[in-house]
Image 1 (cartoon, rainbow over the protein chains, first blue to last red):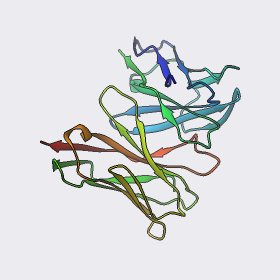
Image 2 (image 1 turned 180 degrees about the vertical axis):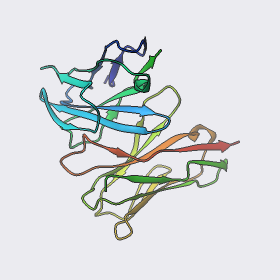
Image 3 (image 1 turned 90 degrees about the vertical axis):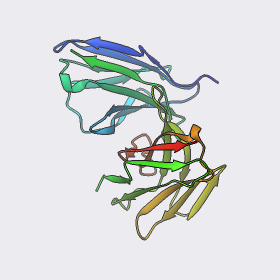
Image 4 (image 1 turned 45 degrees about the vertical axis):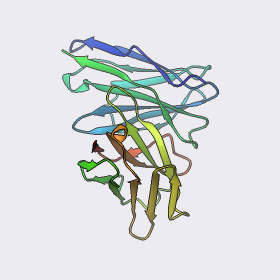
Length: 112
Length: 113
């Protein structure tokens, strides 16, 4: 069974630009969560989607948004990029959200 | 209330030793406590998880001990191997909201041959 797939693996952007990251969950999983990982703040929850609806949201500014499609694939978007947005962005999927989460290998976003 | 505090930040043990990583939480609504292992360049991988109705759970060489009254839980790695060298994260969430994990800051474990 294929795991969680995140694309692209690496991205370099400049301040002010916007970026879209993609996540394909494990087949059959309907819940997708996004996390930001930085050396200083560690792993922080961004938001969770289930059946195309945002079910939970972390404490991040509105520049961070996401969506989920009918096939459970999810995208997250960050607008007006700032230097502090440089991080590893991780996606995790689970059957319904009430099950263990399985992570992808992340997208490394660097802001110049 | 939402924090999970993890210690130590780093840990060095000899092969065969038993590293112990500790976590403490404040929110009594937390009822799901997983541990993740992360290697460089990879995403976190679920190792083992426990719920508050159980005081200990073992899976292979990994054991979680849980103390509900103290609001603490710990990971023990038996007969540690150099291949166990990685960063370990504890986490917590509420039942019904496991899609929202609150993570500890991580412990970098190094197992010397």
